Length: 113
Length: 111
Image (tube, rainbow over all chains, first blue to last red; front, side, top):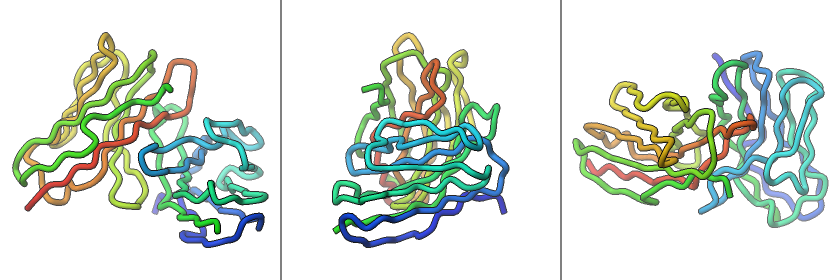
C-alpha cells in the first residue's frame, strides 16, 4: 500500500532531551516536507527536501534539523526541544510533476514538558 | 503573510444541504489545492486547480478559482455526515515549490 509513515505517533518528552521523529514513504517520491499544525495557525512548513542530500528551510525552521540520506526517509530532529515545540507534526511527500499535490502521514503528536 | 485565508472558520449544516467554503490569497499562484482533515488525522488531497483554470469538478466537489480576485471556493453538494471535517486551501506561489496552508474551515454536517 502506498503510504507515508511516521513514528512515533505520540510522544511526551522533557525540555532539552533530543528526539527524532521518523518519516518514510514507499512511493519513490523525490519531494518530502515537514509541517507543524497549531490551533488557529493552520499548517506551517518547517523544512523540505527536493531530493537526496538537498534540504531547505520552510517558514518555521528554528529549533529543528532534518536530513535526507535516502530517498524514502526524512527524519525530523529536535536537538533541544522546548515547550513551544509542542504541536502536531506531519510529514508529506510529493512526486515530481504532480503540481505539488502532497501525500500526508498520519501525524505525530508531541508534548514537551 | 502569504497564507490563504478560509472563510468561514466554522460551518454547521444539515445533511443534504450544500456547503460552500471560500479561500483568499495574496500573491500570484501556480495552483491552488483543497485538502480535507478528519480530526487530528493526516490531510487528504481533494482537488487541484491550476491558475489557468476557472472551475473543476470531482464527484460532489466543485472548485472555482478567480485569479483576478485572488479567491477560490469549494462547494460540497448534497453533504453527508461523513463530510464532517476541516477543509484547508493550500497555494503554491509562483517561484516557490512549497504549499502554504490557510487556517481551515471546520465543517459540521448534522445527520
